[in-house]
Amino acid sequence: MRTDAVTEDLLRELAPQVLGVLVRRYGQFEECEDAVQEALIAAAATWPAGGVPDRPRGWLITAASRRFIDQVRSDRARRARELAAEPADPGRPDAGDPGGPDTDDTLILLFLCCHPALTPASQTALTLRAVGGLTTAEIARAFLVPEGTMAARISRAKQQVKAAGSQFRLPPPGDLAERLRVVLHVLYLIFNEGYTASSGDQLHRPDLAREAIRLARLTRRLLPADSEVDGLLALMLLTDSRRGARTTPGGDLIPLDEQDRAQWDAGLIAEGTALVSAAMAGSALGPYQLQAAIAATHANAAHAQDTDWHQVHVLYRILERIAPNPMVTLNRAVALAQTSGPRAGLELLAVLEDDPRMAGHHRLHAVRAHLLEQAGDETAARESYQRAARLTASLAERRYLESRAARLGPAPA
Image 1: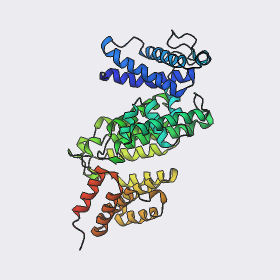
Image 2: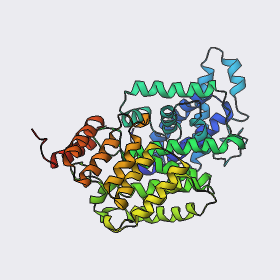
Image 3: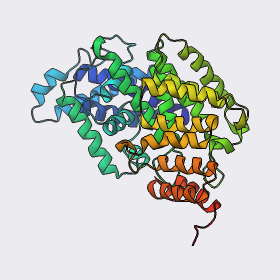
Image 4: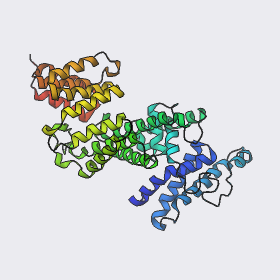
């Protein structure tokens, strides 16, 4: 069933709100999600021809509620469950919603999908399904797994949330900051998978990147005073501004210093830079604010040689102190090489050699190859490019790494 773009966007926006209302009322996540999906299918079939109703959210809540009640009535224990599930007045679309007719429960739903009892993979899949409105088939295609595997993962995640005894409400104040950190991390993972796919023959999965940006915008609307939310959205916008310049027409990767910056999206850069300014004015710095500031430094350089690498290195030093991570150290090595020479960068990379988190990771070898090439050690650089190419599951990155190795000539006999 195809829908027009306006209807599709509206349904995607309303889906988590409607699911939030049903879960608040009935408390049965999986059954409520099924009912909402049926209501969305009905809307997609009727709205394009008959017109969007005056109160589309209420229409969907009513339709989904009726479908939920029908599901309950079909159960053999119909009467016992029906008494617990029947709303105060099923004829009123928002009856029984203690938050009021205009309550948007999307943020609560987002926290629920990012429950700490779930693995990051399950948090990501459940968020895309319940809050993002993607079908199970779409999520499975994005992560290159069979649809049945993804369906089982999502169903298992719902059961784990239920078994954890989670209630449909925001976490208590003492837990809110930590749970928000998990939410932002899940959105960050979704964006990264969309911007640089971890496997497959395409470098980008634009649908995932767009969905992550949409959910980050939604989170910012619901939490407008949080500087880390600002920082994450800014980071996504500034990073995504480069997407059109990252590949050749044939899909081959173009590194940052070789991109045509005239192809960068000036509108996204302006919006992202403004958000960085607001985020960095916050009372405390977080990792997303700092990463966004680094992205803004790159975005504000008209040419690669104009990049303020000293500023980038300082920001990575701060980031490394407040959020130690081998990937941060890896990126700092690149910045250090720009300010102090490739040998200094290679010395910093050496500290990552024994880090188990980097074992077998292609990026460590790719960065080493780049710095070795800058240092003039072409033989070692070629070997590192080839090793990185063998380790990556991304065909686009493999082609790029193999081309860099080939450019250095054949290995000596």
